[in-house]
Length: 141
Image 1 (spheres, rainbow, N blue to C red):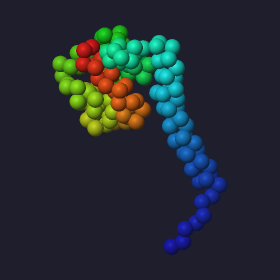
Image 2 (spheres, rainbow, N blue to C red):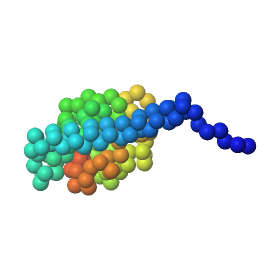
Image 3 (cartoon, one colour):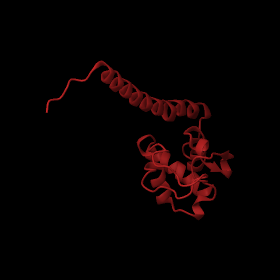
């Protein structure tokens, strides 16, 4: 069996797939890092107050767009409701859900089971201090 060289159409399709993959990565780097860093610089959060800093991060890092959280006034409909989260989960499980969201998939999002890969792996995006601040905020919200 001999392999045929790929044709022009196949090369074009491979190039499109590669550009799409790179574009998606660039979008997430831009959306969850660069835009957020500008918003955070303008907000000038007190990074020594973990709860206040976590509240800022919840707004700037896109959490409010997907999650409902009464304390933040967010009404997201993609992810689980995070209101009174500390009554249902401990700090370690909240940290894991932020850092590696596919480790445990929530059984009930607003419209049925949560989807895998819907939440970015913030463990690769945020610093440990930022994750700690988000956990502190979510534990008291």
